[in-house]
Image 1 (cartoon, rainbow, N blue to C red):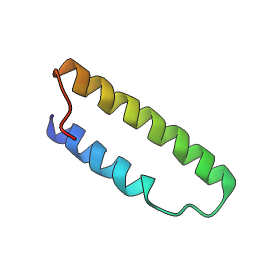
Image 2: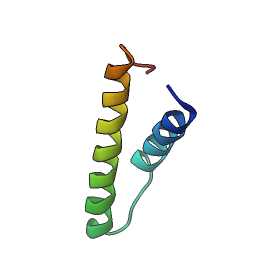
Image 3: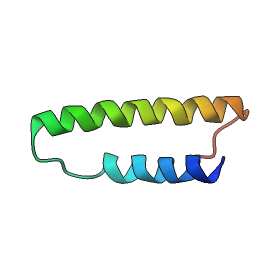
Image 4: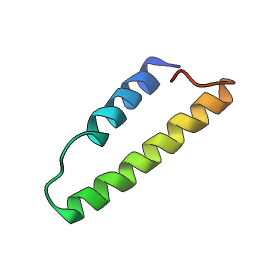
Length: 52
């Protein structure tokens, strides 16, 4: 896992546990988090495993 991927993974974890006050913001962040998770999953598959 590259440094950028590690930082993205840490950001996903932090945002996933953060409280977002409005539904619209939550929906927006959830979409962004889902895309980031998909990217990290793809990176892990390309590297032949997961660092989780």
